[in-house]
Image 1 (tube, rainbow, N blue to C red):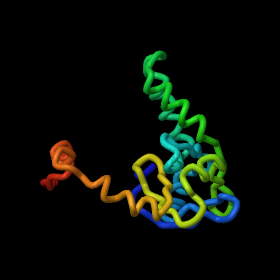
Image 2 (cartoon, one colour; image 1 turned 120 degrees about the vertical axis):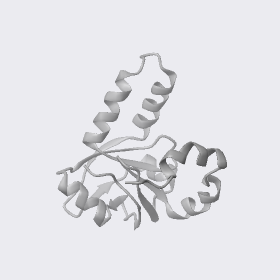
Image 3 (cartoon, rainbow, N blue to C red; image 1 turned 30 degrees about the vertical axis):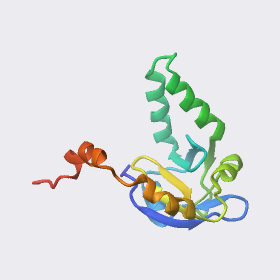
Image 4 (cartoon, helix red, strand yellow; image 1 turned 120 degrees about the horizontal axis):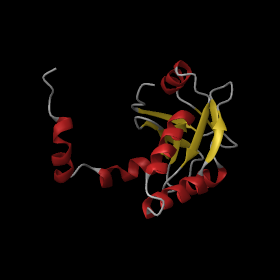
Length: 152
């Protein structure tokens, strides 16, 4: 499957259903994906993983040491917030209630492509947080190999 890219504002319907934006829906249709795992690692945004991508994530986690504290925390959080869902005929997915409440996903949201999954965040909260996530000089240094122009 291609990488998810970009930001597509959307609205969460009454009852917590989110219609997946057209460009993402087309990619999912092309890959024949209708099952998802919706979760979070912080309760501030929802991650919508196509089930095959989530299963790969689980396999990577299983390779970590059984006593790895980070893996255990990750699994505890993603299990607490997580639910497996199926996309309906109108391209909607049901966001878990516990996650809708904690991340304030009840109105306008940003649905952003994060390569192998989608991230859904309250649009107002995202806009307010952008200055805090600006790239630092250290970030730019780390990303230099990616950001420099290619000679391809």
